Amino acid sequence: MFSYFIFLVASSVTFLRTHQVSSQGSSCTENPVFTPSALVVKYGDPANVTCVACQKDCSGDASGLEHTVGKVSQNGTTMFWTVDRLTEWGISLQCYYNNDAGNQCTSILNPTLYQLPESVSISFVNHTEMMFENQQYTLQCSVQNVAPVEKLNVTFYRGNTALGHLQSNSEQKKPVNKTFTLNITPRREDDGAQYWCESKLELRPAGPQRPPVVTSEKLPAIVHYGPELNEPPNPDVITITEGDTLHLNCSSVGNPSPSYTWTLPLNSSPSYSGSVLTIKSVGFEHEGQHICTVSNTVGTVTKEFNIDVQ
Image (cartoon, rainbow, N blue to C red; front, side, top):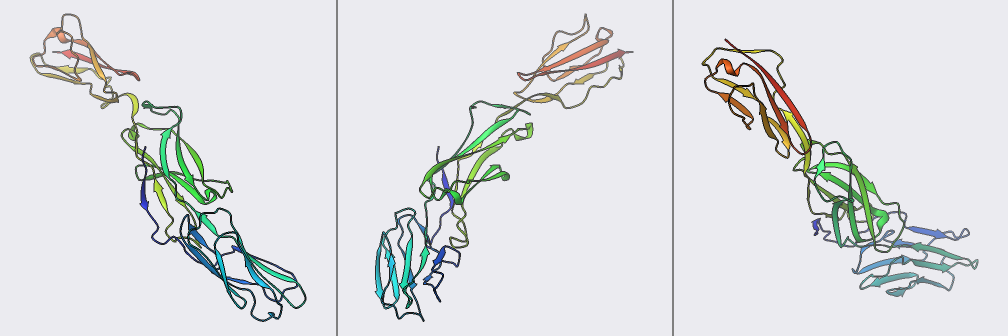
């Protein structure tokens, strides 16, 4: 099964002020400052950040920016970190300086690296055939190779109607496969509807302001239900004059389409199997009870007509 993108972010690196920076050093009059203070990067894209270690209490002889990937250039107490392709998960950048008191003042930036799902698919759990009205079934939405999963939101839809919103509680930073489930109880009105799911990485405020979205294919629903008469039974006797035309309507709806069987009075017309019984010239042999039985694989209903010929 294939998935397709509703929206793909044009800019992969987005900056906003958030709390991704933590500072250490209780005796520090100032702490290093990262710009931007939060960094969200799409997997494989370039990234850069600047750190000003100090501006006032800078008489110490040591400052720097510790890193495991990329490279750092320095101009005084200002450090510039760059990486051509960020592909390492869970990295941190530690910017520091030593003040006159011999204390190290540190700020740590934890960039968020994200990856859109390779695919998003929808299916039923342990079910591949048609569904039956008013029975419970479980939909599952499978999201493949996505990160960070803690930022992942999934919405189930029937047509354009949202059925439920789910979120992962995992803190895994590396790409993982994640499956979400939702119980549904279909109605006959849902026959022919299409179920699908949408995955969304919610990376705001530091990330894209329009969250990256990937959707599943559409899963058509087949809902079977028993026959239902279009017109309810009428207990009153139907009086008709000999020679007139008689119409007895037993039409109904159901899925699969129902079949009709008529039980007629003795000595009347031959058997009939349509939804509307028409007798063009009524005779006294048609007087009595006419029973219509409507059936499909789900259920059966009957409708009785009592005829009085005068």
